[in-house]
Amino acid sequence: MSKFDIERVNQLIEISKLYYEDGLNQTDISKQVHIHRTEISRLLKEARELGIVKINIDSSFGASEKLSAEFKAFFGLKKAIVVPTTPGSSYSDDLKSVGMYAGNYLQQQLTSNSVVGLSWGRTLATVINSVDTMNGISNVTSVPLIGGPIGKLDVDYQANNLVHILANRIKESTSYTLDSPVMISSPALRKELLDNPNNKAVTDFWKKLNVAIFGIGSSKITNNLAWRGFYKDTGFEDILQGSAVGDILSQPFTIDGQLIKEANGGLVGMELAALKNAPLRIGVATGENKAEAILGALRSETLNVLVTSDKTAVAIKKLLN
Image (cartoon, rainbow, N blue to C red):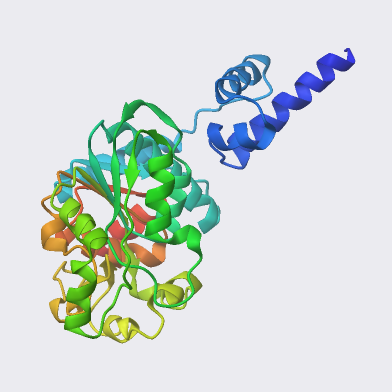
């Protein structure tokens, strides 16, 4: 084998690892290795043809498809995506898989001239960062559905950052920021912040949403550093100590799907009752410790599309028995 051939094979291996093992999309790989994105696609195809990448059929996917059909029918969803995972896989691995499936589904659903709303968090960051550059659509408006963190939250997880990332992957598209904390103690200050022209533009877009995609919080993850970074000193943890099992857009609900309305007085975020008017509402969450929260979210009918892992789906089914 010539030196050229060895270098070529090493290049194919490097790019294949970045794509299939590290979970980078083709745009990110292009930036990292300084090769045009269209060339990345061709190199990945070549790696498969040479046998460097071998794709095996996972028979567990059939079980996931069955769970998807069961969830769709039982909860009256437009779609349920139950992602197959490897036995013994870590939460991080499962989250990456769920994020890639959710990102792919989001790409399929977005159309030109549409409005998409995003929440915050590690799950949403995983989804949005898995989205490739979309050349087939344009003029998409991305807006946050909730205010910003009170404490110190990694900027990668903030809604204002995520809408910017998504807009940059769709040509001629725009993102707006919501310049307000998630919780406001004074009604007068809350009104003043929401009357700000930039913030008002965001809340006006809430009435025009075509797609909303959001994570599902759980009362069992309040020790999570990202959770604490978002809700520090808001008193939200105390609210979750009662009958609440989880929340969507910082609006808690019980396992029966009943919204705990008294918790929302100072919230800067889209109300769930209004969110239900959006045609497509994608809830993304994984982890068996979120099973009760996801079940409550499903019963609340806030989402009409669910993306989760097979392990989490099984944990939810056990709660129904």
